Amino acid sequence: MTPPAAHAGAAADRAARATVCPVTGRVGLWTRTREARPRPRIERQPLPADREGCPFCDPADDDVRLLPVAADRGAGRWFGLHNIYPPLDGPTGRADLAVATAHSPTLAHLQPDLATVWATMLDVQLELAARFPTRWSLLTTAVGVSAGASQHHPHGQVLTPATPPPVTIEQQRRWADRQTATSVLAEPLVVASLSDVHLVAPLVPLGPLDLWLVPAGPGGLDTLDPEQLGTLVTRWLVGVHRQLGRTPSRSAAAPVDIKTLLYPPLPDGTGRWWAELQVTERHAPQVAAAPLVDVVDPPERHAERFRSAGPSA
Image 1: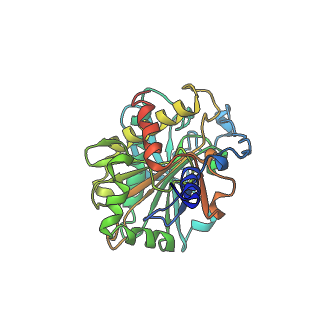
Image 2: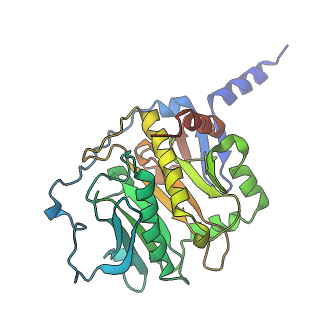
């Protein structure tokens, strides 16, 4: 006969499961009761229809913000623009933008050329980062209010602080542990792969629709293939739309709030590039201060839901 204590322990295992992420140090708790809590309704800012009021549309040739960086893969031109970002402007670092010539749709809309659009933006972001080879640069993109986007014209940022954030230094050093990559790239967690880059369910995401992009081995930004990443980001977005039950739309309002953060190795070569793909509207309120993370499924089931969502738009 099974002791009552064993029955209680089994019930607790079914109700909640805790895990610590070997890269970020986050503690995750999987339980349906947390997911069932009421969530604040996200009021997304629509993209202004009036291009005249958009600070990124058609800058003049003598605009002091323009940078000598541009790319075009056939789905629209992107260019570099310096951003006057008070915490990172001058001795503390830089904040530069990769900006689309097209005013819409946003990078969260499903569209036939979405992978090429993301690849073109990455082309410009990589050029911006390469202008300061001795500095660490974060390649980030945000769409929607909950992601922190104040402007919904398609764009991404390259943030180059004077020194890498301490949390980044610690995360990159953790990649040196052989067991870290083994845990992160375990077969049940892999959603899709292209060559040596894998789209995986993180052991502890910030929300139930977040995924990671992780290469099979260490590498710098010079090893990154923008077309490959654009395809995998699109694969993620297709799964997000299908799981949320949203139809592809080119309407002005962003259909989903997203943020991507691509972390390069440290300037001394420690670590590897890797990226977080976040659906911020599904994160717990004030998640940055939360020691436990609201997610429904353990990572293996999380990966299976994305695999089941299908690979194409």
